[in-house]
Image (cartoon, rainbow, N blue to C red; front, side, top):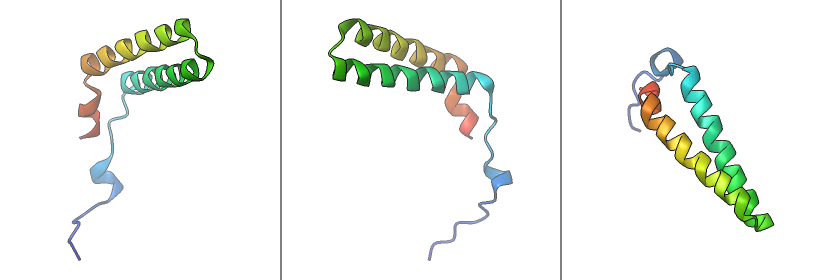
Amino acid sequence: MADLGNTSQADTAHKHQVTSWITVIVLVVATSLLGLAMVLQSIPLAIVGGVLVVVGTVMAFRFKIMEDAV
């Protein structure tokens, strides 16, 4: 078996920044809208979802959300 070392929660805890969670929520809403747009075949809904994907991606890079995971 491989030695996993110390994997306690204290050593792997995230920073839990509010901006990161807002970014994740924006991206989840965007992908949900895009999925709904496919089912309903709604171009306006797809445009709104696409815009939210772009906004969420810009937010993710701006707020550096991946740095919160280390």
